[in-house]
Each structure stands twice: as C-alpha cells, then as structure tokens.
Amino acid sequence: MKIFVKTRRDNAPQTTHHIRKPPLPFRKHFLAPVSICVLLSGCVDDHGKGAMHAATSRCFSKYPLAKGTAYKRFSCIYQAHSQYGPDAMGTHSALLKQIDQASLRVGLDIDSGVLTVAEGETALHWVTRKAYYQASQHASPPEQPKTQGLRK
Image 1 (cartoon, rainbow, N blue to C red):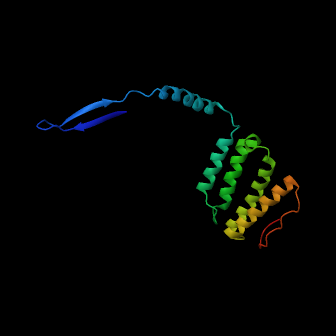
Image 2: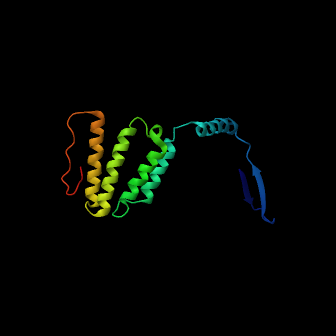
Image 3: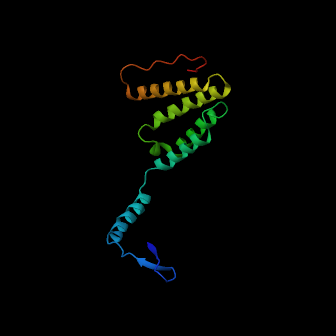
C-alpha cells in the first residue's frame, strides 16, 4: 500500500514525499492457506447441491407466488430438482419430489383462482407437513386446513 504524506515547509513549495511501509511477514504466510482453500473448494464435488440451490433460488426470484406465476414457479423448481437428480437432493429426494408434485397442483389452483395466494400458502404448508409425517411416521398426522377447492 502506498501512502503519500503532504508536508509544507516555511518558504518552500508544497512537496509530496512517498513513504513505503515494509511488507508484513504474515502476508505471505496468510496467502498460501487462503489460496489452497479457494482452489480445493472448487474441486470438491457436492453432487450438484450448490448448483441446484442456485437454480431453485432463481425460480423464487423470477416467479413470485402470485396468481398467474405460481405454476411457473413450482414448475421451475420441479425442473431444477429433476435436472440435478437424487444425488443433489439428498436423502429425502423422494419426499421432495412428492412435495414438488403437490406444489404443482397448488400452483394450478392459485393460477386458476380456485385458491387465493394465502390459501395456497396454507395448502403448501399442510402438504409439506404431511409429506414429512409420512416420511418419518411420527405421532399423529397433521390436520388438513379448511380451504375450499383444495384437491386431494
């Protein structure tokens, strides 16, 4: 880093002096581990999890949960999950596919006006809870919300 210090002397023109700091010894020791970490992180195979997460994030930002775009949103997410496959989805890939299928139906209902966005969100929460219950087989199943037009 270069530092320029301005000084003024009496009866002398204003001058600029260049002062250079000596290099810090830890810079070279710090740079090597950082470089190795950066290089290794690019080589680690996460089975597409990072790419799938980025793809689904783009779906959320591109298509808001609103009438007219709900089905496109869930279709985009379903396609991302399908593209990267079970390895990227992890141990609950079958569960996520089940939720994706239900989300597509809810998206159609929101787009057609059968469900409002709020009712659609409630239906999505219920579908997710039900799918997780079926996957884990715990306690009692969640109760279905009281919404009109919700398909079974």
